[in-house]
Image (tube, rainbow, N blue to C red; front, side, top):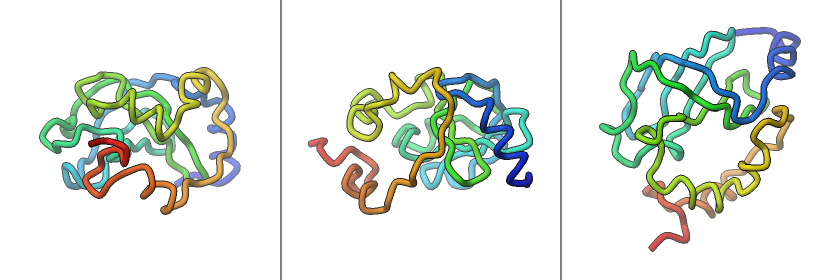
Length: 137
């Protein structure tokens, strides 16, 4: 764990869409919460389950080396990532972005800012219990 000052320093240098080569270091339960990725910084990287394929066996396995993009960074000392390789991203990613984060294309290249957290209500409104978009058939 890094200090708040170190986290602020690291964060200042991060840009949305910035690509890091990373190694998947832990997949706690394929299909459950997401994957942990070492991107060579003193803070960890994590890919949240809503960004990953619906089937856990399609997730990148521990030891996989791949490119990951900065998707989000909030007050937690962890960088939220998105796999760059389409094999490791949900199949309806474009639709997901339109509903969940329509600003993503415009955010790419911009500094990671201090966002407000997404509330559980907002997330439930966007996703069904199976992880699909609420507006999906």
